[in-house]
Length: 381
Image (cartoon, rainbow, N blue to C red; front, side):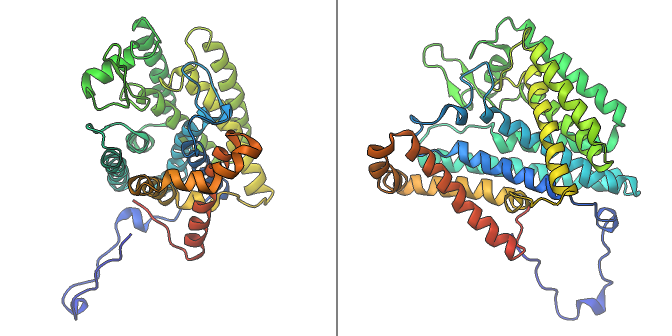
């Protein structure tokens, strides 16, 4: 975060003051504490599941499903993308309704998406250096967020609600057919993994040593499903700003029922972000957003998680940098061993110290974002 350079002496005497662009002149949209809180709780959950003390000893609910299936951890990333879509609706649509031209809103959104993608690549470069890997992983969580943010922003600004629903349905149907004609949903041999590997080569998350095939859970093809999740969040955010909680509840029920039914034909699978996964996770996301809105915005409950939510980039990117720094210095394992495992394992077994480390890591970053929020410091990219 940087401050603008000071103007040259007497600059105001030589030129008129710059005028804000159309996006800056438009009225500030209403901010929903429930959305900030839910975004923050999701980021905290990301840190919790990504940073155990010992990956060999993690409680099952804090692990992703091995392949097909669904655990609580499998809800974290789709929930974040759902909130990305909802935030687009809450931030951009009121300005569009007030007369701000769509291009004036889209340009900063695309630049922001590019910066998010760049940060994801930068973190992967640092991870490659720290772990002495000989290849750079190109896809990633932030890269997927950037792509979905850019596409959903353009869709929100240029397509009507009806056209957005039509596109959402076409994404689900088209992706369902693509996966089905691939002939297999198995790891490495499914069509999404095959296409990703043919494009990205060794720059994916995982290579099967037996077959030489690759797979990435944030690959290009499965981003079709992730975009559908983001678009569902976009429509949910529009319902939220219109006060249509009943629509959120009905959509949640419909998503859960449709996801469970579609699972019989094509499995719920986070790695492939299948249409059944979109519907199932989207149903839960609609219900959770409605619950947070009622409790926080309407009943006045405290917005737990808000500090994480208003500094999501600082928490996610900063925590990754800290982890890589500790790994690079060789401090991570001694901190876990001396601070948690050595004295906790004999008393409680190996799983509790692993969880305690993750909780301590989340608590550390809660203190950081609380301090930033208290000083009204917000990192935006």
